[in-house]
Length: 396
Image (cartoon, rainbow, N blue to C red; front, top):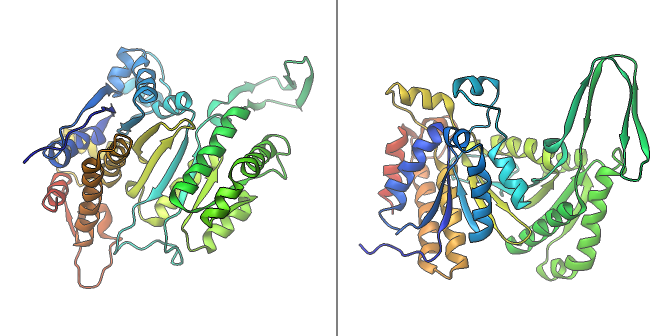
């Protein structure tokens, strides 16, 4: 069989633990037999981040800026326990945070819908895509513990000082920031994504309480929409809608789905997990980081599946859901094919996605989905990690 050729490499960001094991198996079973895979490889596993002083992470991000499309395996963000376990010299930053900061992108997350796995919210009949601003706010916050209490100020470049709080006793403080340029990039990424997918766009903050910080987000979105996108949205028959975050949550719960919900960084972090769980599983959630200048990084929306990795190290069988990781690969391959006008690569990616969902709908799935699956005339059968990939391959 002639393999599909690639002209431009994908930037491949390898990861940690069980997802790293499955990363190789996905390539071996589902991609390499069909595609003459061309990648620029970066090992973001924790040992290599330690060895390079985390330079490998920034190198990978700049490679995505160069080539345009990357695909990333799940990685460990070390805490104190991981520092000890891996004998690290320091608690390295989140690789996702580093890549997002360099690309200044927006993370779009949407569920993989499968006939037989119904959302917990019964009126959700269409997917809901979360657009998460991937810069600043609490994730770039500066924090301090003030054991002695006292007056705490914020000093501006003009020299003006603003009293944050006169603390009567010990407590904590935090400073956050965002940039007009990043907010504008977030807005344009969301508007462009809505136009490309022909979906309504909702945006929500808490500007009634945060009258400067959150209101700045609201104003920039409104200004850009009116100046650059209003007529395009009207032509496409879609709507841009702003509301408060608490009202948005209520509206989302009552909706049928089928729209993009744009959120600030923390709101998007929380709400994407809530939606993933309500639609079935984090392991069934696609995730793509889109920069304002059109660079793409595809990844799974979940962690490294540590518990299964420890079982794997003991030689025990695992049944680890690889759907989100498969869809990271298919998303990246399809986008690379689209940019390079490589129709065969795009078609292969879509066939692999269909083979994956068809396999689950036929009753073959990893064990985490068995309890969620309910389809008339089909009995769910849980299989191990590798057998699930082999069952998908049989449909290619």
